[in-house]
Amino acid sequence: MSLSERHFILGYGSLINGESRSKTGETGQVWPVKLQGYERHWSVMSSEFGMSSVAVVLASHASCNGVLVEVAYDQFALFDEREQGYRRRQIQAEALTPYQDTDLPEGTYWIYYTDQVVPPHADCPIALSYLDVILSGCLEHSTDFADDFLSFTQGWHYPALNDRPQPRYPRVQPDVITDSLNPLLESVTTLSIKELSVTYES
Image 1 (cartoon, rainbow, N blue to C red):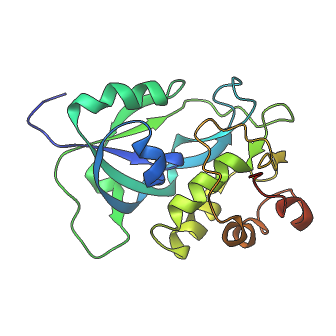
Image 2 (cartoon, one colour; image 1 turned 180 degrees about the vertical axis):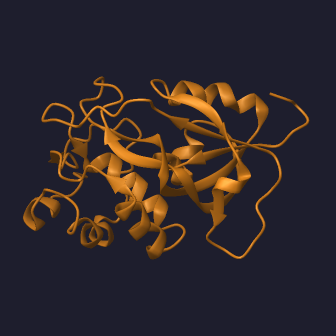
């Protein structure tokens, strides 16, 4: 990577969330975007924490949404470590459409992706502690952005777990307002409304 260039990571999961990004490294300005040519899935990227994550795969006719985040050259090793199990590749500016009527910055764009989706299962389900971080990050931008995250993500029929009382996600944010997130989840999760109402223990 060139030191003189500006570099950006396309975050489409927990990196959408500003607080979550700050736990890994320093980042700059953020642009919400839609990305053509990639499809987002729930996938078991590591069984270490007993949960699934979102990952994207190349798919010519698909799209997903995320945020373009400026990351300094000396911070990339930290984000590569965070995204272990994924591969990083460059994406072209033509594949991106901003949500807002603004020009995207010039520079080199990167994304973390996978070649193979491993379906979630009972031992590595979709964990609400992780999903809460993503959705609260989406709501930093708009409800429409959050709705697009849900509709652009494949695999909601796989097992889900309300782990809020005992979070499995290592970068959990127990102070998120789950009452604002539960209505978004009702249409996609396999959990019942009663199960969704179980919140974080104080």
